[in-house]
Image (cartoon, rainbow over all chains, first blue to last red; front, top):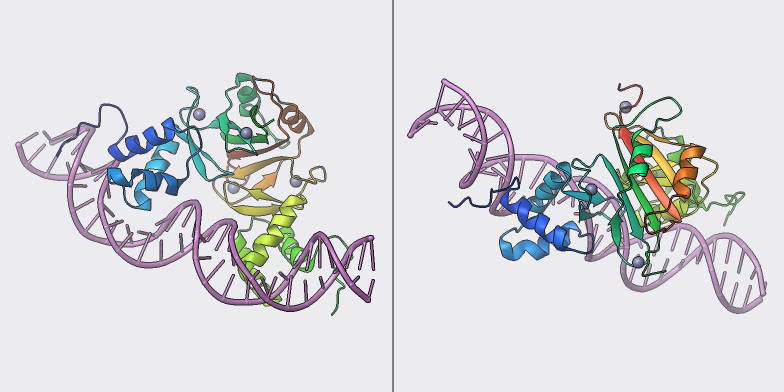
Length: 133
Length: 133
DNA sequence: TTACATAATGTTATATTATAACAATTTAAA
DNA sequence: TTTAAATTGTTATAATATAACATTATGTAA
Ligand SMILES: [Zn+2]
Ligand SMILES: [Zn+2]
Ligand SMILES: [Zn+2]
Ligand SMILES: [Zn+2]
């Protein structure tokens, strides 16, 4: 069988699903993805969820927890999704990844009252985007 | 019919479900709650989800988005769940609400590169709790 | 090359989380 | 007391996610 899809580090299904999410201007849900890629031979939920899991693990995409939806990483710094922040419009579906060095530094070095530090965080801001204001 | 449950501002189902979550040392999932309150006459998912929605709306509980589970608010300041932060242990199921005035202030006043401010945020830190370290 | 281990895929079934829709009852308050 | 709003009860179903197992592809090292 052919195996020409491995010039980069993504497998066939991973690449198909990443391309779809990466082109999208909105967060995509797993079943929306599933319906979109059925013509490409990806027919069942586990195929989608496995690719999503791997892409999240490697930091190519992020899950927007409050929406159960996925966006491509727009931040070259967060390869492993250790420090993520998003702005989410409560009116339209828009989500933007926030890439703010000061914010990241502040939260990465944050320690709580017991002095505990954390190895990962996810921050979601909610409000109205420029268009919706 | 009796109506003696309304000394405070919670309805009967809301109070039953709040009490359960409030007593719990762990975040509770909706269907765990459902099974626990069936003896009290709450028999169907919508009854649970409606109570949860209301309790979240009024800030009595918070949803831990990464777990689809609910905890009682331990922070007298966040009546309406506008500014929430949690520490989540990746080993046991422990979740603590973080009540740090400086952090809250920093994030509440945060504005992104376009100068946009947000009216709400939710922050989840992940790491190992004291016990698991 | 061959053998082995690891990763990825395909497939069916099922588990888990959440909401729609509608009827009835309770509560607040005009 | 009558009206509106909130809450409850109920059945069905939608949406999200994983278990389990068989197969194929890929990378590595003898
Ligand atoms: Zn990113
Ligand atoms: Zn918007
Ligand atoms: Zn709180
Ligand atoms: Zn722990």
